[in-house]
Each structure stands twice: as C-alpha cells, then as structure tokens.
Image (tube, rainbow, N blue to C red; front, side, top):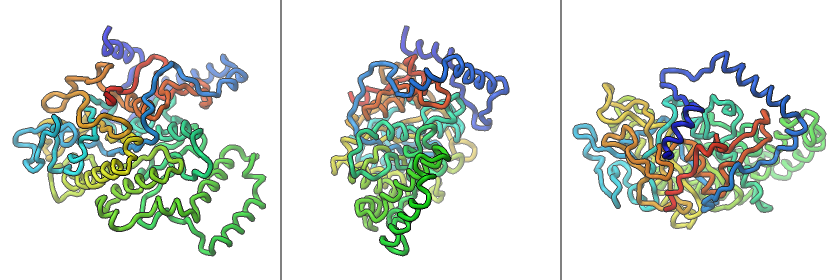
Length: 468
C-alpha cells in the first residue's frame, strides 16, 4: 500500500472537512453531546488518581529529529498570498504582467520583478509547492496554521500555539540571566495563545517601534519604581504567591515579574530599539521593523526561541495587479521583499541563519489561471510554504503543481502526497529537536494532547527532504 493510499484510508476514518469561504464552521447539537460524553466518560473510566500520574509528556514513537536549529521565525502572510504570482509562479499569457520579469534561477522560476531582493536570496530558500490547505476560510485556516490542528476539533479550543509548544520545550535550555520571553509575536493582532499551557508560555505581543518597547521606564525614576514594587509585594504577596485565588492570579504575578525583567535593562533596550538607517534598509514598514527586531532579539540570545510576524493584506479578490492599491501585488510584494530579502541577507552574514529555521506561509493560496471579473483571485486550497535556514538546503523546490497551479502533480517527498499544515508543524518541531509525536496528559480533558494530531497513527511527519 502506498503512503498516499494509507493517508486516504486514514482520512476516511478521521475526516478533515474544509469549509467554503462563504460558510461558517459549525458543529451540530449531536456532535456537541458526543464530544461532551467522550470527555466525561473518559474521566470516570480512567479515574482521577491514574490521570494525575500521567502529567509528564512522553513520545508516542521513537523518532529521529533533525535538531539543526535553535530558533524559529514563523511569518504568516495573512489573507492568503497568491502562490501562482509568487513562490509557485505560473506565467499565463495575457494575464501575468511582463514586469514580473520571470527568471529561472538555479532551475526555480521566480518573479524577480516584484521580489528582487528575495530572488537574490534564493540560494537559501527551499520552496514547498505540493502544499494544500484544509480550509478556504480565513479565520479557520489562519488559526489552523498557528496551532497545527483543526480549530473546531476536540482540542482546537484549548490547543496552544506552535510557538508556545516550542517555548515550553525549550524552557529547560534557558540559562540564568536570560530574561526575554520564549515566544515573541509582532503585528499579530488576535492570534492564538498558550492554550492550556501555563501563561508564561503565551506569546509576548507587541508592535515594534524605533524607540523600543513601551513603558520600560517609570516617570518617577528607577528608585521610585523599586520602592513601589516592594510596597506592592508587601501588600499583596499572599494573593500572588501560592494564591488562594488560583492559577490565574499566579499567572498574573508571573507576567509582572517577566515585565520587570525588561525594565531598565540595557540588553532589552539594544535588542528592541533600532535606528532610522536600519529601518530604512528593511523598507521602513511595520513588517520590516518586525524582521529587524527579530534579528536583533535572536542575536541577543536572551531565551527567545520562537518569533511570529504577520503581514496581512493578501486577500486580493480585486485589482491584484493595480500599482495604486496598497494591498495589491506590487506594493505589498515590495513590503514583503524589502523586509524578507534584507532579513535573510543579514541573518546569513551574522551566522544566525544557520541556527534559525524560517518558515513563510499563508493560510491558503489563490485561484489559478485567469483573473476573476474583478481582476483578482479568490480563495483556493493549493498553496506554498517557504523554508530557509536551520540547515535547509536552499535553491530548490519540493514538489510541483500542474501548469496553472491548481493541484499537485509531484509530491516531492517521502509520503507521496500533499503536504499539510500538520506536516509543516512536524517539520518545524523536528528542526528544533522536538519530538513531534509527544503526547501530554496535563490537558484539561486528560485525553492526551498530541503535539501533532494523530501522532499515534503516524498520519503526519516532517518533510525531511528539505535537508537533502
């Protein structure tokens, strides 16, 4: 039986339904009570004592991880970037603008006209083209990409962000004095958090600025601040430490302590501030600023191991090639290119790229072939994922699509099927030395939370071909 046949049989037993973009994901009343009954029955059948003894994570299988990277940078192109206009370029006569300047670089067809700086870095980039989303719904697919599972599945509501998984797994590697959060998130808005994990592993969200982090000094000065800090603890430590109010109060105290570590700290000031010249090199945009800060934070080596950066605006239903529209291909492409191309060049020059896996993806792609009646492209399941750094062999593609980019014609990896979000998640974990088959029993349901869904069935796995 081929890997594709095995996966198809798995899907028949465990459906992964996707929803059209005009429909909302919903569950039936029957499904709700089935899920509720499963959790309650499992609790009473297993017993609380046995469950309490199963809180330590353990691997579902003995696997060899790549373990090539110390850090990960995850860039989400929210809105669904057009694969056929970028990293799976398809030149359609009478459609593709001539000034896209398609060039074949080391065998990779690429739009050098709109992504020139990225084109210069293709030697570091591996492009997975045999990738397919489960859903064409923005919110659903965006969350799916960030938690590595169906958001409306049993664990979807409590699942931690993949960055939180990295942060909790890498916590043991921290050294004394490292004061940055393990998971930083820039320009992300309302993204998933730590799920059922402790709050300290939630994303530290902020919008980067040249002046650095806000509120890291006190108007009355450091002495006055320290006095007020001591007074606060004198007054309410009984409610903060081993709090009778429960975990939420203790989490709040942990947040206060983490924030204090960033105040009056020259290392934090250097990592989060930047000058105008560097900001201009990265494009003088919020996206470029985030990449600049990401580079500096990783160089500081203060315990941050996962960084997410969002760049939205890729939902190009109309006027996709209009130069005067901010969220059309030319202007948004330049924003991405100025930041991303410069980031890869700087990371390579500093030596950080070798130890940092960079992943770029949207939640899905765009309709291939000719444009819609509004001169745009609509939601489409086929997509791309870009990988760079962390030992990835660049300058090549994994898999291939048909002549217009509608479906996969060559998988390009050992499982012989479309690459899915869960496979991307497993790849990221493996690159960082994390066993993607790990199952934790400290979840609220006590059913066993798998880092990558269906680890027991070996349904998903890393794209090891990225490393040759």
